Amino acid sequence: MVSSVARRVGIYGWGIVAPGARDIASFQALFSGATTALAPSGRLELGSGLFAVGEPDFAFKDYAAWIKDRHGEPYAVRLDKKMGDNVKFAVGATIQAVRAQPGMEAAIKELDEGCHVYIGSGVGDLKVSYKAGRLLDRATRVWNQFWAMPEHCTALRHYLGTGQGTGTLLGGESREPPPPNPQSLPVDSEARFDALLMWNEYWAARSAELHAFCTRYADIEKLAIQNTDDESGHLAAIRARARAHRALVEEAGCPPPPWVSVDADLIWNIQNSPAAQITMLLGIHGPAWAPVGACSTFGVALACGKQAIERGEAKMAIVGSTDPRPDSALAAAFHGARLMPGTGEVNYPFMALRGTHMSGGSCVWVIGDAAYCEAKGMVPLAYLEAVAISSDAEHIITPSKSGPKRAMARAFAEAHITPKDVAVVDLHATGTPGDLNELMLVDEFINDRTLITAHKGQLGHGMANSGGWELTALAMGLSSGIALPTGIAGEHLHPRVTRPAQVVTSARKIEGDIGVKIMLGIGGITACVVLRGCRPV
Image (tube, rainbow, N blue to C red; front, side, top):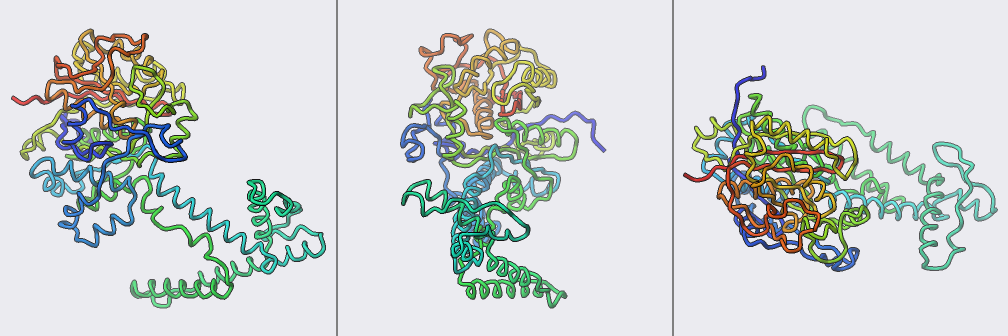
């Protein structure tokens, strides 16, 4: 049964992996110093300096001892070896968050399935995916080349000897003629290389010898488990099949098949892996999965955790996001979409509006039922007054006004606040022309004293993480009474910026304890979060 009891939700721990910030202390120091952690990438495919990006500051060894103490050294070594950056970043940020207060880890373990885990990602672990793709591509090229050699392809021998025939496409008839012979094209040319790939693929698909190999491979796969009484029978069958497969490859003299050339690590690093690994790390059994909402992912994860606590399904939730180091293909796509400038310089929000900068890392919060957590002696870092989600329903990148306004209006109603209560609003503000639209969007939700912050000039666009990083900075500011500097140069604000006097450049005193955060995700996904700061008495 869903509980109808009103529950206040607090934030009791947080952890950060970000450019220039390997933990909360360095994160706060970077923001307080109004510095940027963005720097030109040295990768040749990105022009060796044309694109400023944010490389996360992270070392797995910082967390190895904590993991070894709980699970032993083999577990920590396996985690380091098998997991990609997304899992490791999230694990590191979670360990930071759990260590934030004495007794938090014990409380989480005591709750067990009463603690949920929602860790999302904006783009997934691209590095692991691309590695698998490259391995498969290379293995397929070598494989096709072998089976397209005349001595391994009867159809090609016939064609070369007679100049006739297209060969029989195994698995079905084909009248498609052979592609141009690559030998007719200039040596070492791209055209010859592309033609060679097509030629090899065509004839490998018509190799009776390859067909015979695959038939024998399948027969080996059919080897039954001889002893089904225990696990040993299953393992023995796997080993027997592996030996027979190796013998078959040796006999054929062929390279390893493409389907054995991709490491299983691709499976262990799918989208829900960070959340799943955190449950295993902490030994808890509550629901754990990956909410995905593009650049609004942190807000979506926050909503999942908050709602679970309010429904009475959980007392605590570990929520957050994680994304890989800046990826060259993604940077190129952002540049192609006119969202990322190729100047080599850092572009701050509200200024030249040339575009944003990609970065990677993680942000994880531990939130909980305030009555439960504070009875356990935990001290709130801030209170989560509201989270609302809406869809733009207009454009995949440029936000409309009506979609995001729905989320803001619902968040304000849920938090029981009006524009006059808002001390600070932190915008998504990516340094694109959308910044100006965003200022107009929030105009009716703030007052003449509301401070306006935007921090992507310091950490970049962490894909899913930006919302979490910026919310953490907002909560820190609310609790200290000081809005953290943004690095934005007030004298260089774009002339169309509204309320320029309210845009935070250097540190500013905050009048009030309510902060609002806007996240605008690709695909039109908006998250609006309302925080209430907790200032020391």
